[in-house]
Image 1: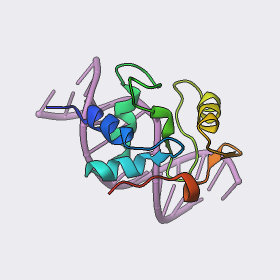
Image 2: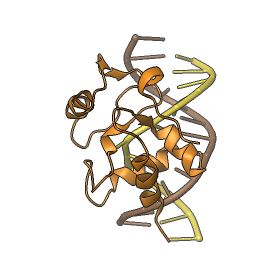
Image 3: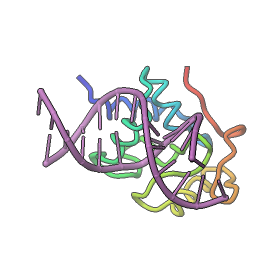
Image 4: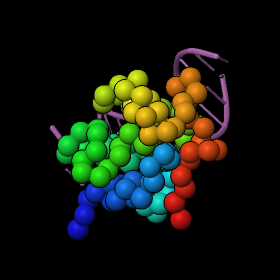
Length: 103
DNA sequence: CGGTTGACCAAGT
DNA sequence: GACTTGGCCAACC
């Protein structure tokens, strides 16, 4: 039985490079409505914030396209995403362009 | 088992 | 536009 947290990773793995997803979408993909549980799971993450193998935790952002998270700092996160080919707008991401949706 | 916490979100003040 | 409140769900103590 995989933990909720592991399920988050799996769905997150489905996000293609150069795209981002929101906690909301992940929760929806998991069939739950709790975005919080997703974020919480990531926080208590066994490895940390960065890829634990294949899980691009840095590709997860807020529902408004705003970066959320504290682990490594939003700044670093933004830089990382920019390197992936995502243009960040004043700390925000264009969900219209880069937002990846499940289901 | 109950209470607190949290990388959230939406609505109200 | 910034802050507060309520709600939601899973993990941790």
